[in-house]
Length: 417
Image (cartoon, rainbow, N blue to C red; front, side, top):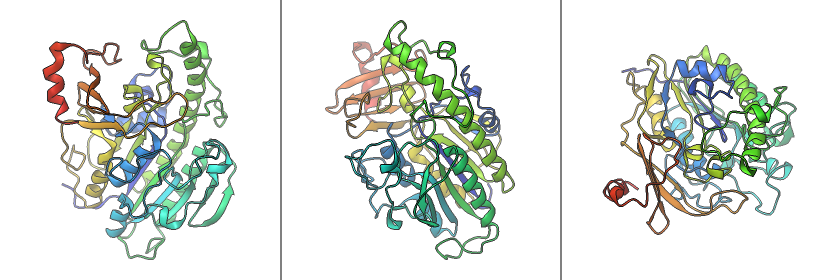
């Protein structure tokens, strides 16, 4: 067991599906830098988001408490200023803490357009920044180019030219270098020399998929390889091909930005986490966007590179709600070889605490549980909605919830929901 506290870097994307990596076998994905990271990491192949929608997932990931218990029940709910986050925990352990990028947990105007400057320039006050010593980002706005930034060093929003992933990764890399020269964090607290925790929160590859992607051209829609669970010959296929053509361009451009960030961070040998707050259906089962309990929406990449720990596959179910606990363990120096630092249950809970009234999103409240090989999803009243044997049916083509022969198995899993 290591006794050395680690520098820790979280790279958090938005709408990056677990399968959308070259190393995961996606023929459309050009992700050489993340493929290299995967080759050096504990690759959590069955990782899920606790809630497949941005604010709910972000609140759970930062606090280690699922929604709505953390105070975020509805899409426009801000994270309570009293909520304790992983940043508070690491501040107390003497770390310098920093956040760069998309926040999506502030108080914003529900009547304002979701895409554009209104939400991008919404000021997040210091008390609402989750306890990070340095905070430099934006509420939301989905501006993949020329983002508006505000925060500790930027009292008013300033538009920065460039591809958002490039801008944020470069600024985070510069901050890491600056911490080597500091003897205290931005709040003036004493800290362990050189120890830092940094979150880089990227909107890509979130829509608008047609946005420019730092010179990476959109794919030919007709050449995009679709999964078998995308219906063929109709509107769903046409739309899926069109949006995936842009989606994969943003994956490639963001992979390139992440590659530069990883190169800048490598000299300090941090624990590196790469993940996404949720995925996107992209036409699977004829559905689009997120909030749905299907794999394309809930399963996310989770790569964890830990100094001194050999690369391997971790095929047990893991939830992003566990990241805060893992991070605390790494900060304490409690890194066991081959382990993620905490003891975990053999399942991961998933849920949507409310219906988000936006086009194409899931139409109901639900809760469920996912293991390595099974997924059970219940309606709000506790009745079964979906049950899948993921081992035999990874594309979820056959819903087993109505089969009497499976009732005992569902009841057993239902104890964990």
